Length: 127
Ligand SMILES: [Cu+2]
Image (cartoon, rainbow, N blue to C red; front, side, top):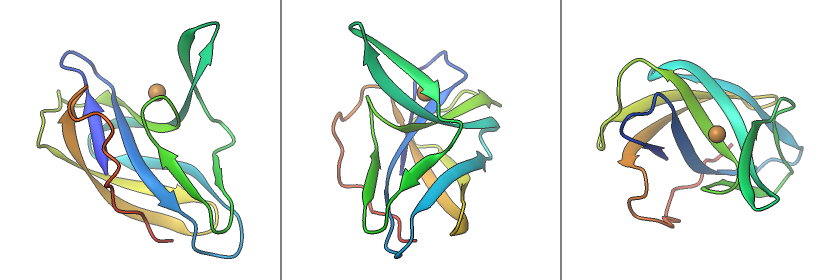
């Protein structure tokens, strides 16, 4: 699990891979973290050549057997209202809330924005 931040920002983006090993669809509906007051599930899309992100109100569905990758330019977690600036190497404890699987605790390691692009060696999360 990796969270990225930019130096003067009060938000950070979280990336991870979620695998649904069950036989029914599940949905990431909310969550929380010890880094700040807000936890949002976002989607990034290109619109007229501009990257725009929006909160996914209905949650992020993961079909049985599917793997959903939260990554730059796509789905991500947005940590907002950060209590203090994050520094590379910091750890964020977060809780993901799934419709069926319930709450799952995860730990994020903070990396600077733009460092190590394209990390795909993240451990999958078993549900
Ligand atoms: Cu976002």
